Every structure is written in structure tokens, then in C-alpha cells.
Length: 246
Image (cartoon, rainbow, N blue to C red; front, side, top):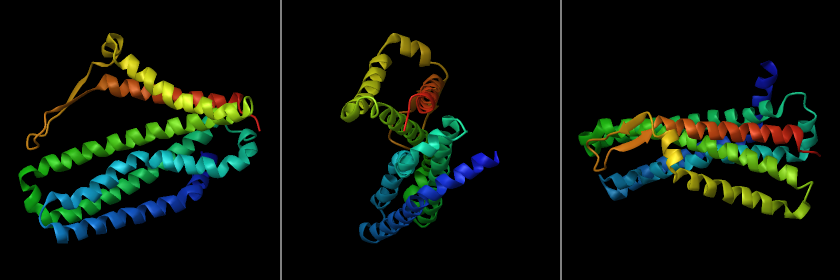
């Protein structure tokens, strides 16, 4: 456990500059929101920068993971001779990204609250739905960001493998790996088998004060996506342990 904690600390040091830059960007978005409030008056348009900042966090974990991998690629030989399995080394990068995205989103959440309270009259009619929707959106942003981060790990590991086998054509393999899985997934999701496997555990998100229909998802869909991501992660670890050479 101590060794893994040291590994996590190392990953934080590799990406802490990006993390702190992200916090500064959060602060700038809040300042932009305050500025828009002075020129846009009491309208919800002033909160657009905060919404953009939250949505952008879907790319947070993949950016952190990519930067960490990019820095370490010159020391790949140390990775391959590390006594710890690749899964341990890779999960550290995902956990590091998760810690950072949670802190960043919490910062935005708290600052949003401080900004919303003086503008309570704009939200009074649908105050409860506003905060509940935020609490629902944040975990989904984290899940999406984590999923993309795992795919970044996979594409990186695949590239490290094929670049030593097919050389300059390795980018074609990576491009294919970017295009084919989403296409195959979309094809499968249009089948009755997919609906049979995933359409259970109905979850409805209903926001009465919003002018939108209730949003419906399924526990089966969450489980399906979780299994896919776990599978991709362990496939990545297997490639790193068995196929990548310096």
C-alpha cells in the first residue's frame, strides 16, 4: 500500500501544474460569471461560463492521464521493469485524475452556490430542481471523464505496442481503434439483444419545474458501460505487461 501511495504521489507531481492551472481557470470562469452579471442583469445568461466549465470537465481525466503518460514515455523502460503489474501503475493515473476532478468540481459547486444565493430570485421557483440536477450531473461528468481516460490509456498502450511492430503505420491502427469501437458500439446498441441486456432497473430523473420531459435511464446501461470500461482497462494492462517492449 505504501508503494502504491508513493506511485500516486509521483503521478500528482507529474500533473500538479495542470491541476493548479485548472483551478485558476475555474476562478476565471467565476469572475467572468460575475462580470456577465453586471452587464446582463438578472438573467440566467450570466451562469453560462459556469455551465461551460462543468461540461468541459468531461475531458479532465483524459487530459490528466495523457499529460502524465506523455511525460513518462521517455522512461518507459522503467515502467516495463517495474516489479508492480501494469494495472497498478495505470490505476494510479486514473485515481489521480479522479481526485483532481472531484476537487475541481467541488470548487465550482461551492462557488456556484456563493454566486446563486444573491440571485435567489432567479432560482426561487425551481431552487430544489436546480441543486438536485447539479448533484446528478456531477457524478455523470466524472463517470464520462473516467471512461474517456481509460480509453486514452488503451490507445496509448496500443500505440506503444504497434509502433515497434509496424513502425510508421502504427497511427493508422490507433485511428482505427478510435473509429471502430464507437461504430461497433452504436451498431450493437441498436439491436434487440442490447435492449434485452440493459433495459432493466428503470431510473427516472424528474424535474417538475423545468420545461423538459422526465429523463429515463437504466441500471443495466450503467452496468454495461462499467463492464466495458473495466474490460478495456484490463486489456490495456495486459498489453503493457505482455506486448510492449522498449
